[in-house]
Image (cartoon, rainbow, N blue to C red):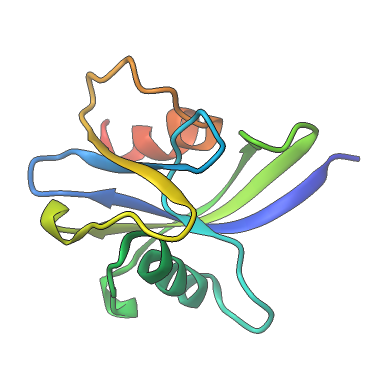
Amino acid sequence: MTAEIRVSAAVVTDAAGRALVVRKAGTAVFMQPGGKPEPGETAAQALIRELAEEIGVRVPEAALVPLGEFATDAANEPGHRVVADAFLVDLDPADVVPAAEIAEALWIARDDATTPLAPLSRDLLLPLVWR
């Protein structure tokens, strides 16, 4: 049985139709902002906390649009699957400031084929906004 990692993930878009992806320190691939819920947190509460910690943005819960639950292979933990509660949120790129464990944040367009992406982002979440 494959171990599961439960996370809350944000599909962050801007007015130009780009999507925000982040790279954590010590990793090579980009993924959606977000992280693991703390005990007692809902998926939305966890994402609100993680967005504040990781990219310096305070988002009200009403601004999060639930996309559903998605599961695939984890990008940085071999032998694990990531199970994500995903939400869509629109942000102004000027408001995003990488912090905590985030080494880099990129706004990418649909035709960007050069940014290495985690399977969750590449195969499941970004195709939702770039249909």
